[in-house]
Image 1 (cartoon, rainbow, N blue to C red):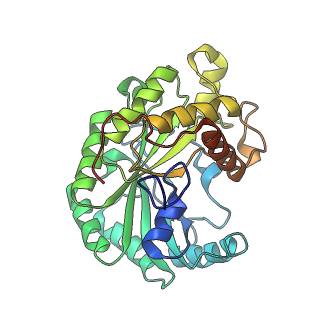
Image 2: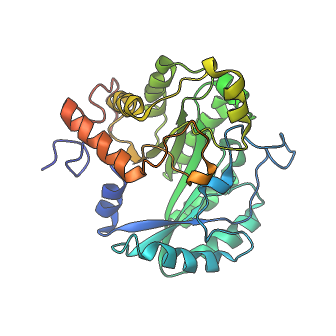
Length: 319
């Protein structure tokens, strides 16, 4: 029997174990590019996107908004079949850009096309906190009656000074509102957070564990700041390197463990770091170290330290 609040003996609440517990079998996410943009790119708020963003770096080869959603799903299943042979069903992951940034009738067409495939048991919808409203959330409540629905918000930072610096054009209060309204409706709610953004100290970043734990999030994805080619943040780093706290992998591994100790044990950990193809890397990234190796190394180090997610969590949340 697990000594943790989650139903496995790993020292963190793992995403794969969560879904195996819910469904009884392995599921896999299939990325979808549904042709959305974002208000930071189309001029509604700004042009050029967030300073760290190169969306091409995160899209698998089969993702192309010139293809129908149905075609992307079929090609995605074939793409993943060699690597994830145990996967029995899939979640359609609307990943590229802001996937609620359109009128509701357009969203309905795209989401329901994905759900019409019998291999798809739910949706993961990545978006910005300022691209959601109560009408859209109420629609997701209806979808969630017969499907698994997860809304993933790009939180990136809990600090307004950072959000302004990276050209987000929304504040943290908007993030809190979006998450609270999602959680209120009992829709699973995930978040992305980036470590190493300019101007933030290690103390700043560790304090985010307490802030994030208070929001009611179901899951989190951690990203080390990746200084990708052709992004404004890479140019900023080259001009002002002292404004950035950069991590070697061993430093990042120990930082993440410190962070996990402070984080609620009821938050599912979907990933520990970002990973992009080498052609997008600048010289400031971790080279060929793969995500699987990183997870193994973090877990091994946690066991060596005799620690676990939530060990030093200060506010004992209800499950």
